[in-house]
Image (tube, rainbow, N blue to C red):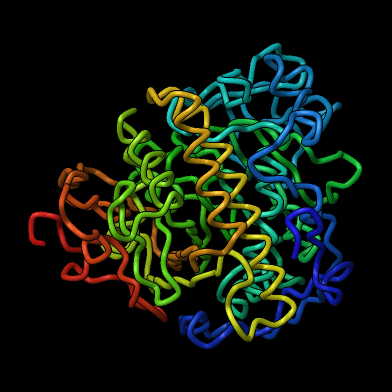
Length: 491
């Protein structure tokens, strides 16, 4: 399939299927339903998300082709973008700007929370090496412009079509969000990005209220396409969430790790927003590529055995974050142990799944072929999004061009068969009063535990056996054990 002509599977083009059963190895065992459970079978609804053809180019992206000029070429204020989505309403519900918004919140202002109104002239974006970024974060180093939100739209559909739904644990989620409850159900999407997951959830559950929060509003959504039960707020998930206490039945956070300063503290804060028996869903695409046998690609240098531009580029972007003091990308290593130790949660489940990057795998059906081809395009666009990060880390434009070109050619030519690993960790909110974290946990040794393989020392063959973190063998409902999370000093 050409990179320039990606279209949805015919049976998904207008009516995406969210409820099909994924393969048995990808679906974890669900926690037991509360005794008060009742059946609920929502109907699938149409998808307004863009198709892959809107993000069809790889290393030769242009601002004109992607429509990025409106954001990336200048700093954008909330007056210019936020008011487009909410012309008559505050984008935040705090302080004096509080409106009659669907999801309840505690009264009064919260001192440590940002509040943005459509009339405020607050710069939400900053320009860095030709791309637009959220101005309030120095840690999250992927852009926040039209081009990146188009990529996030595609990535959202990849995950959705691979799962054949918007979330794991469908029986549990659909029970939580069933209609006819005395208290209307509500959903929170933290780090909503392009907003597509929130919009799709609002379409699927029209009786539920859906809120998406991020440091910038979705830049591609048209107000006319946002469902009546969905809204977006500019908010910083690193700050207190007391204003959303006991407001949500489902809380979702996908690929926000590098933007969270203290992930364990974040998990505690989020707990106070979740109603009893509600579910927290954390998701991440790993910064590590895998072979078709699910073995991590090695980190080697040109000329060494097992070298790929794919893993070389990914590793350099990963280390560039570390050089900025941002180790949040390694937080998924600790999700399971943090949730197990947290008195606010129970029924912690961990599972992962692997998506071929390109349709090289035999026996793929129409749906999975689309997912594989779309993932290839998505990865090519991620490489382009790495440019500002790598430039700030000291790489020259020429070196970046060499790496991006080499990695892109490996994907296009399918000279190697690689897979992208996605991880879900979920937990159920216990029916107990919220427990605040009262003391700091033992500092984490990020130097010894890492989510990506260690580089091979000069003269060695490869580093494929030196991976740490989530084990490729960690499957249904089981996360990695401490013995599986080996430190480099033990190898």
